[in-house]
Image (tube, helix red, strand yellow):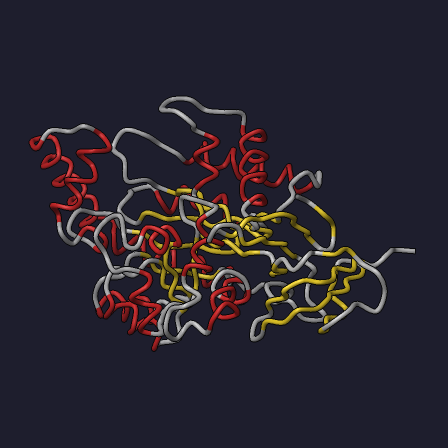
Length: 380
């Protein structure tokens, strides 16, 4: 007979409340929580926080393990397992691995590499050797001529749950200010002013030819397949209106307060980067996540490029107006992202939900992940 998992003397954080008590899980599900002592002896968490496992919707960190240096391609399965260990160590029990489709570089093709990574994720899941549960998130660059062709093979992959539509053309969205684009790419590629201007002209001509057509094709395919859609880097009310018309579920990284407010008001979930929270602002000079939290229009956090930022970002925002204390802050990284992705079986501590749980100690003003359970099984 399966033995229950009993955790007691924990500071339990549910979607709405916080209390000192216990949790009982059986067969991978939470069956009971309560204040005070557990009905029978369990593991003493010594007053540490017990939180729901974090849900990460947009991290491109898998690529860091797959291509750790320029022109270095690491074995795909090894990269997946290294990435998996890092996200679980950060308290993430459900992760959407974001893979590029099309790209904003002029001299590389990523399609075959991304399919290799997706196959490695599927292989690891089938062999039950990942500790977090992995899904796929396609980041589709509409200003790439072959983006629709490159996304087609992924549409039959059952791991694919989310598609974001991106446009990094100079003069658009995140780079409405072309000088920011130049600063970013000059630092990244060491290009001269003349080279940057040539790239700008080439990118804009590609967008003129393919941008609108590609967006329509991607939206149509996702709607037909029932795949959740996210806008990306919306900067203007016109961008938001376009996202509404396309049936977007999530507004990723809006770059202005006006775009965030309009997205939230329209029912889209506004997602911002946890590194933005931890650093105290956007690295590219766009709106700060805390400003949106203070406005009451921040719904989700993503670790983006630093897995450990997700938990730290939530704790950092627990005192922000309109967040609702620690329960509200933890919702940003658990219940709300799970629901936004259609995963209604997880993301909160309540009977009936999956026992995806993390034990977190508070040490010198920093949350420290001490233990992780996925479906009541200890994985870290």
